[in-house]
Amino acid sequence: MTVEYLKQRKEELGMSIEDISKKSGVPFGTVQKIFSGVTKRPRFQTMTKLAMAMKKEVDYRDTIADFYRNNKPETVVIRDAAYAYGVKNEHYYPRQGHYTLDDYYALPDEQRVELIDGVFYDMTAPTPVHQLIGGEIHRQIANYINENNGPCVPFCAPTDVQLDGLKDNRTMVQPDVFILCRKKLLQKSHIIGAPDFVAEVLSPSTRKKDMTKKLQKYTDAGVREYWLVDPDKGRVIVYDLEHDCQTFIYTFHDLIPVRIYNGDLKIDFPGMPAYITRFYDENGDPIDFGNDEDDDNDDDEWA
Image 1: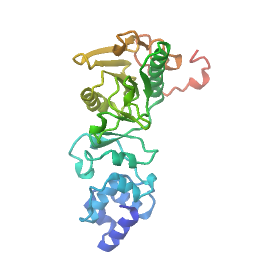
Image 2 (image 1 turned 30 degrees about the vertical axis):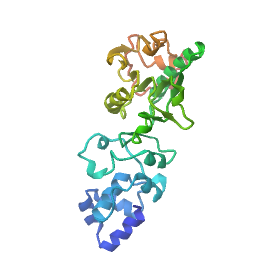
Image 3 (image 1 turned 60 degrees about the vertical axis):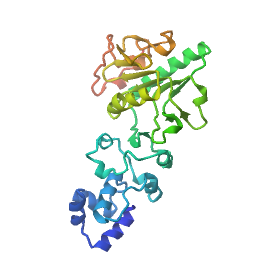
Image 4 (image 1 turned 60 degrees about the horizontal axis):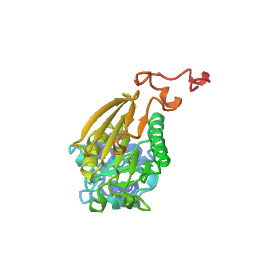
């Protein structure tokens, strides 16, 4: 399903740009740019719409691996959009819900996604605050484990986790921060099985997935403790999954106990470095810096 193939079909069928636009629902200008070569990176869903409009015989359940084999990797972008959550758009994503690890491994190395129950979710680049908080949580966990000669291993994204083990070939996630205590699950290429502790740092593009789909998946897989760290609200929701899913809510002003260590390890949010705490007030609430227009002139901002 390349652009060249669609051009060939267009000639064979004698269709005009207007005909293709009307039949596919893709805007006239978009179709024109694709066929003229102006658009160098047409979206996968757009290409699928055009193909569906131009040839009934096309097997629209071709795997995404097949699509990549017939296209340059840079011409396709998988988006984490509402399509993945509902069935109303299934017409344009005929294989969502049916992808497997074979499809996952066929993606280019630079295309970072998660596969959950056969659905691909794009992992957009996180914000600096997201990365700083996730990195600091990982640092504090790693320091505790090292200082106490602990048997568990701390990880941070991107690390592949085949959450449900070998019995499920339709799920591969990349938690922001996690702790693995069963070292037999650690393989050379990825983790096969559920971590003991997982922390996801929320972002606008992952909030719904992390708070709903992943909560259920982690619970079912046997994760013992799950944290939802919300930089936008300055709070942390803790799910104690091994004790009747007890739920606790903290702010970024709290020392938050890690329950798989019986609270002996506490993540010190107010004690985090100044380059993180500068984003939050004394109550742990986010500060609105606007455009940070004066930051370049303030040499003591992080002092």
